Image (cartoon, rainbow, N blue to C red; front, side):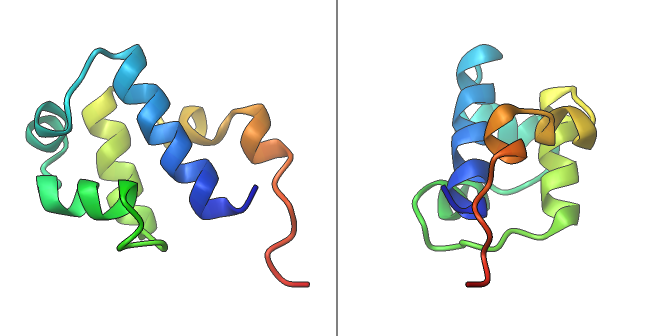
Length: 80
């Protein structure tokens, strides 16, 4: 799996775990719903670290908690 896929999956996983909609996350994180949808639907495959930090704030987790998964630990190398 590549990094974009891991980020997308993690956001979807957290939305489910926290029982949040995209719109609820948008309100809590101050990231527009369209920006979140662009990440989830592949229009934005390189979200910035500030955006990810804002999403983490909306989820009520740290950026370390966001990346602390087996999926991120086992990412394939992006440059081949």
